[in-house]
Length: 241
Image 1 (tube, rainbow, N blue to C red):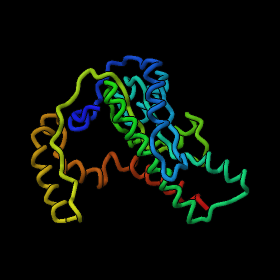
Image 2: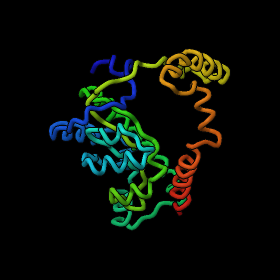
Image 3: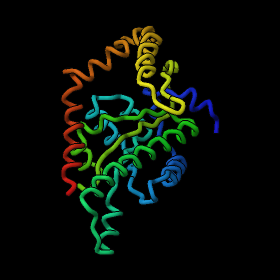
């Protein structure tokens, strides 16, 4: 594995529209199946979408993002409780309410780990990728589209495609601490990162980093979708009895 793939990684949003080969689909399927899960409970699944009509629908629902429409594939990672619930019925056991809530988070983490696992492998395979978190905003509609049982829930998506063009690698924020966390240093890094990226973000026609984060946290065009995402997570969590 080429370590530079990790050091030079950047989100790619300009794809050629090339179809993913059956061989590559089989390979990434094997990679995803080999992703680690907490205590081997296998609480995630992935749905690989290659149908152009479905890609167009997902891209349209997700802020009309062209990179999803042009992707070779869009992989949806879900927290999956189906297998555990099936075993529980076989053995006539039930989880306590606290355990169910714990498993909600564990399944979410497993799905996220699998998504990262897949992203790294796909970059090694020569594809560009972009993680997509906005699926929460239309998660119920998406669940129907991909036949997802109510006991499971959408976590994150991954756009995958052959690279047409890409942006330069942005400066990186220092987020690693040795031995213990330091909140003062974390805030200092905010200022350093903001200053280091102003020129690049301005050249793209986007707001400087701190301004963008503040906008997302305040009442903006993003607010309804983010609030819908919060409603989706809360609904799933509170329905665990």
